[in-house]
Structures are given as structure tokens and as C-alpha cells.
Amino acid sequence: MATIINMPRLSDTMTEGTVAAWLKKVGDKISEGDILAEIETDKATMEFESFNEGTLLYIGIPEGETAPVDSLLAIIGEEGEDVTALIAGNEAPAKEETPAATESKKEETAVATPSASLPKGVIIVTMPRLSDTMTEGTVATWLKKVGDKVAEGDILAEIETDKATMEFESFNEGTLLYIGIEAGQSAPIDSLLAIIGPEGTDISGIAENYKTGGTTPTAAATQEAKASPATNITLSAVEGQEASADGQRILASPLAKKIANEKGIQLSQVKGSGENGRITKSDVENFTPQAVAAPITATQTVTPSAVEGQQSTAKPYIPAGQVATEEIKNSQMRKIIAKRLAESLFTAPHYNLVIEVTMDEAMKSRAIINSVPDTKVSFNDMVIKASALALKKHPKINSQWKEDAIIINYHVNIGVAVAVEDGLVVPVLPFTDGMSLSQIGASVRDLAGRAKNKKLLPTEMEGSTFTISNLGMFGITEFNSIINQPNSAILSVGAIVEKPVVKNGQIVVGNTMMLSLACDHRTIDGATGAQFLQTLKQYIENPVTMLA
Image (cartoon, rainbow, N blue to C red; front, side, top):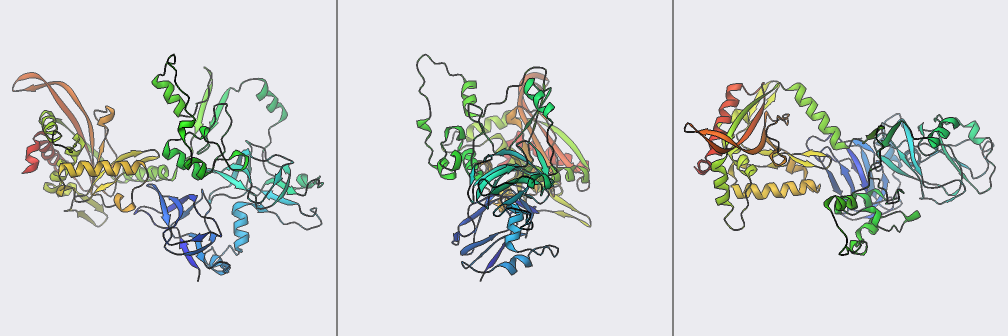
């Protein structure tokens, strides 16, 4: 019997998810534990495995599309099983379509017209709706040209939606007879995109009778663009797209791009085995960089900037005096960060308390601790431990606001802000007050490493009662953070600075660090926050007291 797989809730704050990549396709055999897809949540991109076995009969959310939690993601069942009723039962009442019609609209719309109006075998392909919010699409590039043979499954073009640039494949075969929307042009969904049919078929009049709705540049504008450089240059950032050294675009599957990014492999160095030289997952996984690296002779001088230039995609040359912009599509994580922080800042009345801490004793203590074999403790670990102990003495800081009550947490779960490629994640150290400094150090390194590799589990980012954000390693001496709700406070940690200080009436050289506590005034009064900072200062300035 067929089983419905819904969009899972992979984090406590997740309301919708984006399918980053499907690792299985319709018709594939599925075993329990197989990875079905990679799903991008508001916190990370995570592998989603199957808890069922059978055949993948239906995919409800194509790659790149976003859908709410519990939306129909896929159907697994017996090979050949009819799942029409299951699909219809999970669609909105207004949508009474068969699976074939649903897939056709998502992937490629073939407009049915009377046989008298279309020659036999001719298919009209329209601009597909590739995301739930898409109203128009832009053809980023055509991978086929008029006259090319098209087989079922061939990639016709890359289409840029409001969410991502996606590969658009053909579900028909024949010859590409007509292109209705040129590369770089935009048009509403259902506009005439292309015509496919038998070679030599006369399609005169078909395109003219089908309203595209797209915009076509005038000949004068085209000639002007060729004759002289444009005054304003807009660089559209195609997600995951790379360029080779000669400026040609590199064709690669989304999963191949993701794997190459994780492994630090330049796609320009990988030879593709797919159609039109397209790079596949196996090409990246089997790539050996030693065959590409050119030997450095004794006369060559290699500078750090030169090495960096080899490792990154070349940036376009922008002549002086010209305006240049780059538009980067917002990832799901970036959207959620924007939403959550805006809600926090404008719903919680923030205020900040700042205190300066002397770090001389902490520096001595850290040096002694790290002299122990296989032990590595950072200043951030010491701040985390001190904060946990201070929270036990001032539980009102460790609280949450609700409309009808304030929740005081007597357990301490500290979240540590970690910067990742797409934004910020906050892995949590459960029961931090019961952890030793070395345990805190090992846990933070493990969580931060897995956060940057997108390997954190949803449960490892849930349940924080207090948050710490440290920018000291970047030389930032003082800053204010936005509260990570539902927490009532967040501690901002600056860099340790060597400066003149007064001790016993004498000016001497000392090391100090600034701490800024952002508080929600609904739960924490100023005096309460100040008392917490005083206790925290005592622990940090005298680390031995943390053992008491």
C-alpha cells in the first residue's frame, strides 16, 4: 500500500522547507534508510532519509521549490500502483488534476490545442511555474538551439525564478523548431517558451498566434549595447553558477555544485561526462586534483593573492566610473534570519548594559590549563562557563516572556552563535553549568565544525535559554546583539585589548575585554541585568572561583 511522505518539520522554528536536491527519482527503488532528498530549513540544509521501502511513485515538490510543513513531498509504494486518488486528496480543492497534469505544470506545460491548429507531433512548451510564488521567469541560458535534436530528459534551458535558477528539462522528444524567449529575457508563466516537433515541420503562424507576454529588446537597443559599453552594469547572480578561465559558463547539476562547494573543488577543473559536458555528481566525487595542478618552477613567484585567485571564481572587470551591482538571491536561511531578528527587535524592548572586564588572571589561568596534555580551552569557553554559573545565581536572566506569564528556567542551556556561509546558526550546549571547561571547549569545537559543514541535527539547535555571540576573534572590541528569542538576553563578547589601566593608584599595562548584555525589558529590569554582569565579571576576573 502506498505511503504519503510529507514535508518534515526538521527544526522547532521551521514552518516551510525548500527541496535543495532530490537524490532519488520517480521509479527508483527505495530502501529504509536511503536518503531521499536534501531539504533546506531555516537553520541548515539536511539530508532526509526514508523510513519506508518500495518504489518512488510521485514527487510532489520539485528541486528548488518551497512548501509549508506537512505538504505532500512524495509517495512511496508498490511499483505500478495507482496513486491518483492520494495525490488528488492532498491537493487544494480548487485543483482537480491528475498526477500527470500536475507534473506537467510543474516541469513543462504542453498546451493542448485542437489538432487542426497544430501540425501532427508539434508540442507547445510554455514558461513553467517552478515555484509557489513565481509569476514570471527569466531564461538564464539556452542549452539547446533551434535545429537541435531533443530527447526526453534533455536539459532545454536554465530558468531563473523568484527563488533560484533551475534546470528545465524536456518531457518530449523531437527537434527544437522555435525559441520564444531569448536568453536574458523575462516573461510571465504560460508564455510561449519553445516549440518542439518533427524536423522540417512548418510552424509559420503558430508563434504569431500565441501571445508570449514577454519583452523583446529593440534592434536599436541591441545595436547600442554592441557598439559601446553600457553606462550601468547589472550582474545577476545565478545560484551555484561558475565560470571557467575563458569566461564560458560551466554546466553542472545542483548536487554536483553542492558537493564541489563542500569539498572545495573548482568546477572549472572537472571534466563533465553528462550531456553537453555537464558535470554530474560522480564526476565531482571521482575528481583527482593532482592531475590539474601545474608544477611550480624555481623561477615562479607565488603570492597569497595569486593562490586565492586560483581558488575562487574570477570577478568581472568593472571599468572605473561605471556603476556595477550584484543581486544575490536570498536563501531560505537568510529569509528566516531576517524574519526572526526583525520580530525580536521590534517586539522585545531591547536595552544594553556594558561592562569592562580585566583579563590578566584569566590569561594566566588559561595558559596553565592548556599546559595539560590534550587540553585546549579558549577565552570563549571561559566566558561560557562563567555565564552558566552566573545564570544559576540570577535565574531571571535565564527567562522567557509569555503574554500571561514569565517562565524562569532553572536549567542552563547556552546557545553559541556560529557564522556559516548562508548566515548564522546557534548550536546549544545542554546543561552547560554542569560541564567542565575542557568539555565545553570540545563540545563547541565539534558543534561549530559540524555547523559549518551543515551536519548539525535539529535537536542540537533547540532549547537554548541564553545566547553568547563572540566577535573578539575579528578584532571587534564592543558590539550589541539582537536577542535570540525566546531567550530574554544575549551576551556580546569583544576582543581582549592591551591598554593602560589603573591598579592601586598606578597606571600599568593591562588586558581588558568589553561585555555587552542585551536584555528584554519585559522580563529583565536594569538592576537585575547589572547584578548578573557583576557576578559574571567576578568569575572571569578570578577563574579559580568557578571551581568553588
